[in-house]
Length: 294
Picture 1 (cartoon, rainbow, N blue to C red):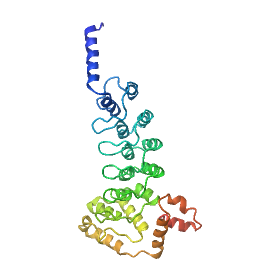
Picture 2: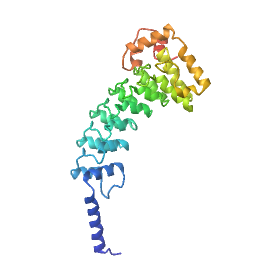
Picture 3: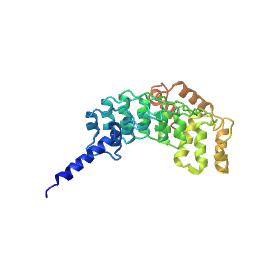
Picture 4: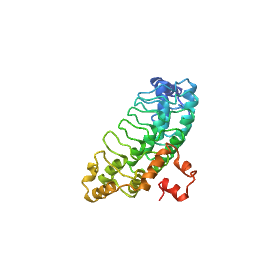
């Protein structure tokens, strides 16, 4: 069947007009995100055409978009072609903030290219806060190994551990405690991490994982506290049985052994405690006790 040359010309002309309608930067974002990308556009072809990989479209930057869709190959390609690894978007977030929520491979690549593991977004949240909140324990581990501060504080003076326990994220809680997370920090609202967890349980969202988080916090703290002024969060007060159980936990004085454990753990600092403790010249039973293994 023959093709009408005029129809073919019209199609080409329309495609050229569509391509001219959008800037190279917008076309790059569309291609990375696979949102109404234009025919023939690839990240490689747009780079060859001279697109600036550091120009945002609205609030989005190409590198951030690649991290949002967990495209590690695209992340590396953009970085190889000059993407600013620590650039911030309209929300003052770096690409690492987005990667930390979703994909450890992207996190590793960004760190290899010099991403700041302690970058703050508009709310002073670090990538580790978000990895802990999303329970991306693989990302939590990569960030901690890459220099993330385990006790970083956000605008509310909450640590990544607080973010993890408020969602009952057991795997992240374990990792953070193993890297020296302090279990008894207090935020601007007067809540300890245990108080954050108690509020979750008070909303009827507690289960076995939340109970295990509570047990870990209790071991790490020795003296469990939930609020600066004492007692339990308001969410718990409506549930008589839970309220009494938590009040009983908070009223238990820490044993000398438990208090000594807290002091030793704190003295070891912010590092992988399981590596340090196993080198101590003490019996394995004491090493396990220090590592909250009971």
